[in-house]
Image (tube, rainbow, N blue to C red; front, side, top):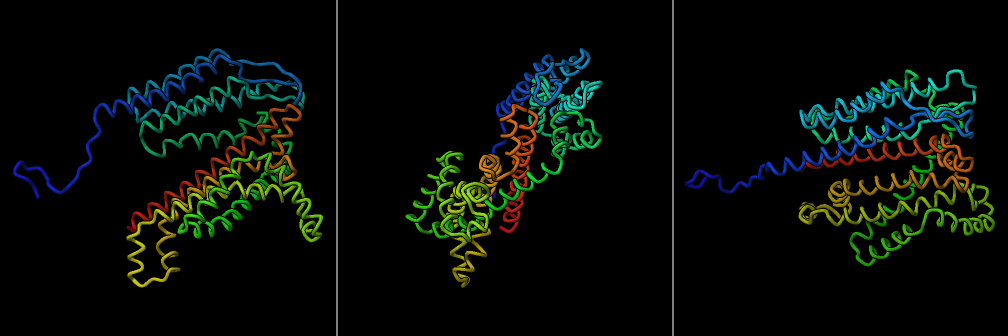
Length: 398
């Protein structure tokens, strides 16, 4: 239907992005890329490798040859120039900058160890870390420029190739990883067990509580207040507070002690981690269930569904994407808390972090910190992808 002027009536159209809006978005992307160029420019001039005769001894800082300094300086500015010229191709120089930085780290550490003793270590210095940081930000900025979605991950096959070909084999962190061998694999598996078990316990406790509290305001206030109060306690303090009561329980009930419950170790770690994970599970569960459209529930009631059928077939599927966001937050939180739990003998990747701190060995710290950070990113990405998949399926069903 149209009016006499030929304009469509009854249909709403979203306004097209204005020139000012497009200009502002382009300016934001260029600001990100300019921010990425700064650490890369600084990193090219700073020392790249720290060569030490052993893990603990002070060492000598080594810089890049002038040709590589000039190359990095050019690559630092290319993403910004590409964003002004043809933004869809910005990912090409950004990816090249990241892969070149990783390749240089591997080749320069290998060159530094030539003729050195077996115990010598070649670590990444400030220049390498700044360049990697800037290149990573440039890759992120390139993704904001548009272009093929897969282009944002073009660096991943290149990084895998560098790892598989042994280019980074002489980097001190990987050298420490090889020396630790099976022990590192055991600690990684323990870290995953702690996170998975604590998340499972939090879901077993938090999911029924969220369902119960979603329709009762007083109950919701009480359980959310208690879970929020736990979040205000620092992780180390909570672990310390759990030592005395769990020790008393183990002494009072020998069966618990035989099952492995004690004041230190896995029991207090799992207890603290479960308590920390309750708040995001509870909060998002209550919000998700309360945000289910009343019309959908009324329609299900009109179709003769029982309360149980309405929950399982209508409320839970509609609430699941939002609820899963809380599970994702809890999982990422637990990856970090599990690292702290190593202080009370629970094991995990935190063992290397604190061992490195005690001996001032940076490589050991990174051997625990880098995998923990990557694990948190991987868990977040996997659960975020599951959220998106559920949201799309619900959108198609609607």
